[in-house]
Length: 191
Length: 191
DNA sequence: GCCGTCCATTTACATAGGTAAAGAAATCAT
DNA sequence: ATGATTTCTTTACCTATGTAAATGGACGGC
Image (cartoon, rainbow over all chains, first blue to last red; front, side, top):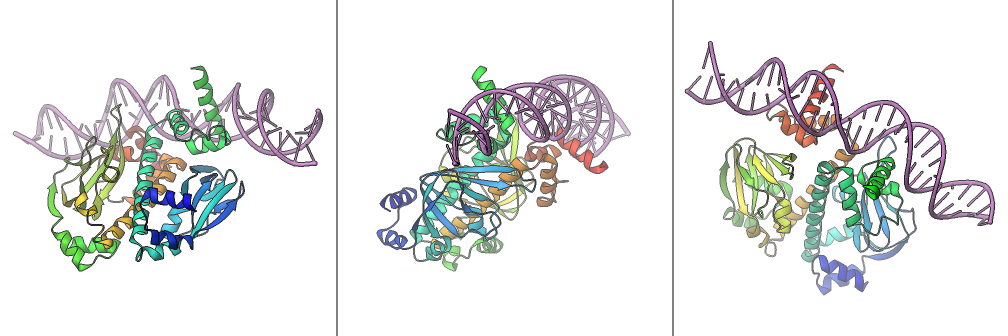
């Protein structure tokens, strides 16, 4: 729990009082590889802090194809953020790619406390701002760069994932087919 | 100014005291068609509320091509949000597509007040959350939908823009060339 | 009303990336 | 270890979209 608090405070400092209260709100859970933390179609309720493991956030289209929106690596926050914020059913699934160790809390048990704990609301604001900035970056990468360049960026951003998860998950993250990723990898090792 | 306050409070209520203070922070400015509100390469300082007019946020690549990230229509907030948040030079330009009428404020004059005015920080949090949700939606559209479908979505989302701004700005927003947009439009009127 | 500029469309060709299916390689369960 | 399953690569073909250049409209300034 100490580690957890340290992580939270590294985003924005929390008072000892707030931290004490948080102790009662977060609880420890384990998630096995392939299990879900959030399921598409349901309203997300849980907010989590990933202490160990890897998850992916993905969309499934009507056609059945999947798009990996994001990979989560500890330490980080996890959850169906859009759904938590809007209260609408989550468009995304959050699935463990390895066994995971998670601290989880009921999201509204947190937001209910914003009035009393402005330090927590501040953390929340900063998080939302950071996520927005991240999304904006990713948007530009997707539109302006070709798959090859995006692959290089992926390898920089997630160096440990390349050999840990299946290529088709990486392809899906890049918005291309495994076929195309294979072509790109081949090109690179030769060219 | 009354309208302005109403818009702010429609996002999240502000106390009369906060509103009174804001009066001293925001000032009215006019922007002519083609002028910039934010310039890429410079650190953004201004936060604005668009009362009348249309702007575009766009990237320029090294190759000189442009990508229109977003169109702003009154009433809405405008600014180089990423740059405001990170304090790094703005990657985007914000340019008026029509004459604009704007209320502007120094961003840090606002953020400095978060400690005193938690209602303002709350508004800020809610905004950031909403923007994040928007970006997430757009990301999925870009990756999962072809240009034709994105064009239909554009027309739904910005119905008044189709005949107001040049086609090449729309093409750029869709991430395609004017050539391709022209093909799509032709297809639609026939098919 | 005329000219010049800006814009949209069209054409011909080039390319990145998709689809489907087969083969090769790696991994897992027993 | 062995077979079964999963994953990765390759091939052949197809489509969406890009590039460059030409054409033709529309509109503003005078």
